[in-house]
Length: 72
Image 1: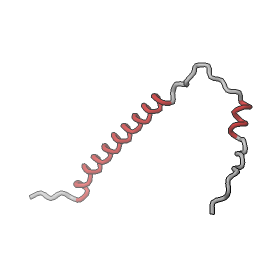
Image 2: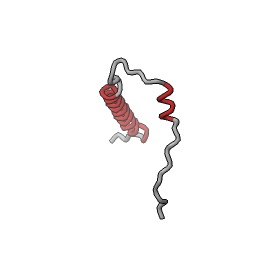
Image 3: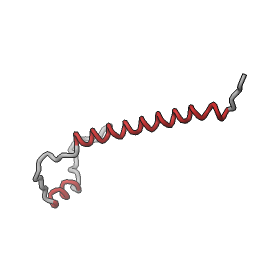
Image 4: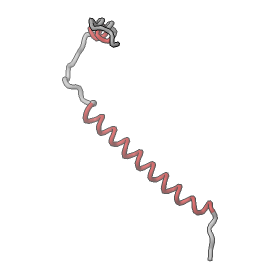
């Protein structure tokens, strides 16, 4: 009866794991690209222009104070 060393037994399993991981990562990358392409690659309007000053004021505005009582 022929006995295999521990190294010979691990090599196919590691190769199979590496292949499985590579295929899984490739499929996930393709799925993420597909979602990006479907949802974010095309603007809603072709000639959408926003004034930079208005965008800056909106993004950097200090939030208004609430007129409610603090929680007890």
